[in-house]
Image 1 (tube, helix red, strand yellow):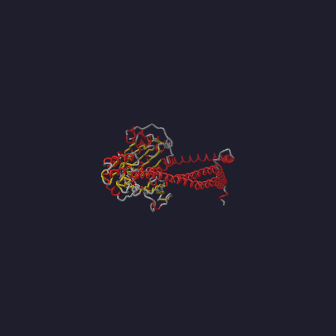
Image 2 (tube, helix red, strand yellow; image 1 turned 180 degrees about the horizontal axis):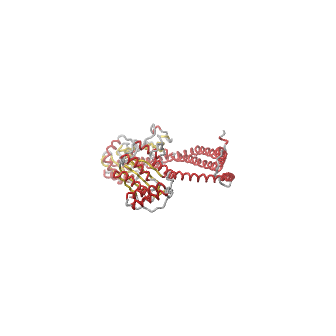
Image 3 (cartoon, rainbow, N blue to C red; image 1 turned 90 degrees about the horizontal axis):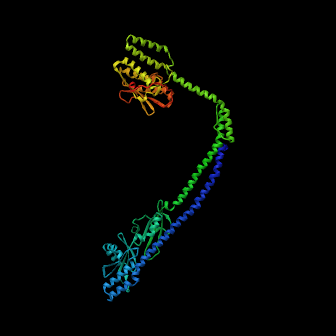
Length: 586
């Protein structure tokens, strides 16, 4: 109950009651009455379409049956056959009269592919309409014998039969004595005959099952269709029933006694009730859209009312606990905005103390950096070395002069005479050359050193005394234990980073050595080993933060490498200096 005492919770509950409840009630109503009405209209449209298409189909069938019946009931063929049998006319005249009748009666009928007539006493003599010559030739070659055999079982009815891929309407020609004297065979254009039903199936994107006498849908549409469970005969005519997963079926039967006709449609749910499902999705979408609106209202109430109150409450608690310098981000001309500005003005008097503390932290960081470098700058030592160097040159001792010059370079680097913490890489390379000179005197021919520096790296700014400790580490832990070896110094630019690698081929670092070096780089250097690496890693972290890295690598057999990468775009102290040439770098 304590939760509902908070203003924010009460406001959210009010918003939900005012907006969400009416939306739910409206959604239930729309999903009930409106969807039921839409479903009924959809089913009525399908059933009406089925009734109309079935009526057109029956009209086509009745027309064909009537055309076949007319051959007997018109009397022209029957009279001509009777006159021929009585000797009133010759066979040629009978054939002429029969051909004229066939052509006149069936020659222009669009539902027929051909009309064939023959007498039982001369069945091989076919009378054919001119437009059906090709179809009649196929009939004579493939279907004539079977049709004649079928005629023996026919009475006075017409019958639709299938012969291969062809459909015929067959009827016996009966004389006045009710005895057959010939047969009439009408070739049926199955596609045109079934056009009303196939159009209905296409309109509803349904699959059609058409049964006419002993013929199935293959005779009309070229493909069959699976009916509902239990078969089509189990369906009640005129009802839309489920026919498997995501399918519905509708069946109708013809009412004529001249043929047996049954039509079935199998329709997908998406086509039949797609609009209903779309309407349901629309309702769901509206409800889903309502939720962001509610969330927006709640967010506005939270931002403008409950959050400012919570901020003021939290800030008051922090000040009460003794935390100074607390301000609140509240603006605006309303009451809460004025209250927030007044509260902040009371806390701004602590800003001077905060600024002072920040400056002290910066100064402390600089002090820690300089504490890791040489803080002593005795000028007299350098002056004394210059005097010794001058005296050595006067006496012609070039070796002593070179040693003094190299020592002077090292002392200048270590003492940081100009109080600089960041130097161009080319100055660090001078210190490295001086150190190489001294270790060369120590190891003689047993030590080989190489420097490979890309010209575009020479002006890169690096912390002072970075290269010399890396080289010293390689000498003390790699070259000295082995009594000699090689040291490679490589500097190159990779994108916006400077990559420095110091590799030595002296004593191979053991697994224990690698662990000690990794600990030194991570600041865990309790043993005091690898002090130079630890110092460099600490300075890099203070100066660059995450924009620098240093690691130890022993992937090359017989070599140990220390790889340093620093950002060339990181902010730092940059000292002006003249550029080195490529020859000086190498």
